[in-house]
Image (cartoon, rainbow, N blue to C red; front, side, top):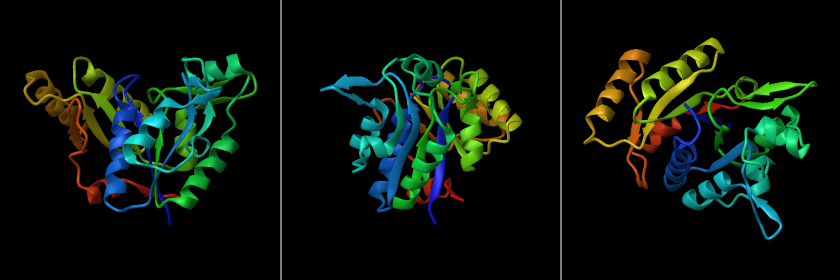
Length: 230
């Protein structure tokens, strides 16, 4: 039975893909069959006439995956805007049925599937007259626990707490919190780590320093965060 985990963030550019790559790398290096999946990616670069999904490409290179881009990402958009807007501009709306199909295809091939979200947790994936689809809908449909990536710096307390409250209100299970760009020598970073535990009741599972190439979390503890896929 395959297991899955959804990686989200408190916002854009906090290092979600960077941390995701370290997660998958840790699983692969521990000998586990690990795969990656992302429903929708915007801001892809065109190379030799093909749109290259940067996030998926980065994870594939860092973790040493053999998956193809088409296996890793269902919808790839060139416009660097929210997926719902990119889909509208490029006339390629996201279909939940395809996301489910592609996700379960990855799950059939790998024991551990790490699914990366788009932007922050409150990200519209499709928003038109026919349908409104948010990340929360996808997470609930696939019944995945959520690992939250947050920046260690200024403003993270508000971002983490409001994200956790949104998740609680939408019945999204929190698997844990990881702080990125963490500097132990920064008093504010140390205090943010402490205050996150006090305000959410969840101490960060790990912290990731800038340029880190290995996640300071045991492979067994990481694997335990994944939930069996229905």
